[in-house]
Image (cartoon, rainbow, N blue to C red; front, side, top):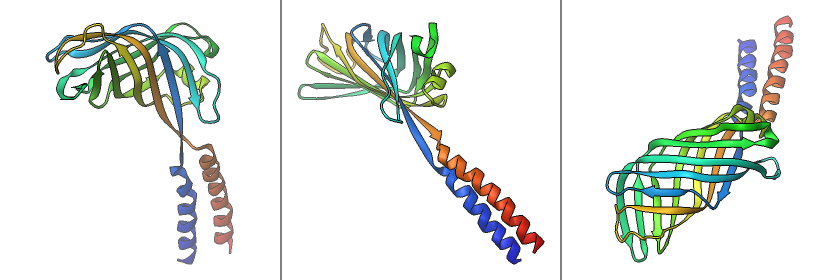
Length: 221
């Protein structure tokens, strides 16, 4: 009975480190071009041909930003609701739709146009309009091209946040649910990837070896 108790304790110690994780942030950035538009009423929000110019990943450290020749296109789910405040109009769109970044990353060996990232909106997304400027933010479940993921030392899937988008509105809507079309000025897509911690896997392997050695000695005693 004493031998069994010792083995149970050792197994528990071996498994404990497995839960440790390390996050990788893959960041796509772009500027100047494409449109974000909404046809009004129950329609979707649509992003068309938004340029993507750079990608980088962290941690470890802050590696260089690699050049991308790419485009982002997306559609959200249908219009859900809106609210107004002095100088601010907010429109909310449902989950679903689609999210697609296509292009090349020469440093990663991707020299012909490829689907770099694809996914769907996992939660409602939001457009905030203040004066002649509009900003868009949303959460997306994404899959990354395997070649690009290997190059950036990342897993293949994760959750992304579209943030810091900035658009110019030639015609400003005066209430919720009104159509608009904005020229995109900047976009930032930060994708969080949870990877197994290498040190945790090493500890697990060491623990299993230790378990085998100690267990053999216990049963020989």
